[in-house]
Each structure stands twice: as C-alpha cells, then as structure tokens.
Length: 238
Image: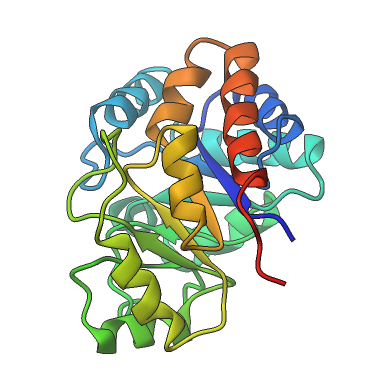
C-alpha cells in the first residue's frame, strides 16, 4: 500500500474543481480549511487565503455548501474540514458536527481543541514534539481514524528542511497505536514529503498546496503530481 498524500485546500467557490484536480493528480485525502479570522496554527499563506475567503463571504454555511458540492464530485475521497474551536462554538458543537457529516465530511480537525475537551465531537487528534507520552497515548486512543503528527513547534508553512523532531514523535506514537500516522506542518517539497513518508504512513501538505491552488487547477495538479511521484518512490514495508 502506497503512502497517503493529504492535501489542504481553503474552502471557496473553486474548491470542488481544485479538489477534483488534486485527487486526479494523486491526492488520497483532502483537508478543507474553514476560514477563521484569528488562526493560531496557520502561517501567512494560509492566513491570507482565509482572509480572502472571508472577504468573499465564506461563512460556515457557505463552506458546508461547497463541501457538499465537492463530495458530489468525489464520492469516495475522504474529506476532512479543518478549523478552530471558536467557529464550532458560534455555530453549535453538535450542530456543526452533524451538518458537516451530512455535507460529506469524513471526519473533522479542530486545530486548537485539546484532546480532553469536547469528547463528544469525534475528530482527528493532533500531537506535536512537545506532547508528553501520556498526551500522545490519550490522543491516539481518542482520534478518528488516524493521528496527525505536527512535525514542529510553531505555525504551519514552508521550511527549508524537514523537522528533525519528527522521527522521535513517530517512534513515541508507534509505541501506543497501530493507527496510521500522517505528518504535517512544514512539508512543502517532494523531497521533504518523501523524507517524512519514510518515517510516517502519510503526509499532509498545506501551505504549498494553497499557493499552487492560487495559480489554478492546472498548477495544483502539477504540484500534487510531483508529491505523488515522490511518495510512490518511498519503499513500503511488506
């Protein structure tokens, strides 16, 4: 089984077309950013994309609509909204979870929601190099389908090299779970994606994918294809 490639795209009218292009080029999963005005985990590229989306009226209802449109085009692809707790607080926790599922969400990611809060909201949990072994175990026991490994301490964005902290985080996570481990934050080049995939079961690429998507579906397809080729070259244990 090849390594999983997850691509992050910001919700907007063009999302269905962009997501379809990404999947056709080799993405296995699409994270859908629901824009938030005060993001804690996003670097400047994604933050600006969120600001543009909000300026064009992409509130929660509109994001759910484009999520449903994307699901209609991609009936089999996992689609995972990613946002912040304040948005769910404003919309209603259970209401948001139910409406997202109805629109086609496979799961949720709430970037700033600690693992021990709102356990009724089933979601993908995040762990970081700063997470204690106890927190990694708790997150692994609570996560929905896979565990999101944040490769570095800080906001997401392009970096010159893969964080050296990832190897230790993968090792600690594998001690407590057999679930897939997908690494994200700071992964942008095909080389970095391949390096991360040698350690983890998949990679999540956000900032560079958003930047490519800003240039249109063709450029996004080209970029995702380069990542897919790099991951396909990584040996997979039998």
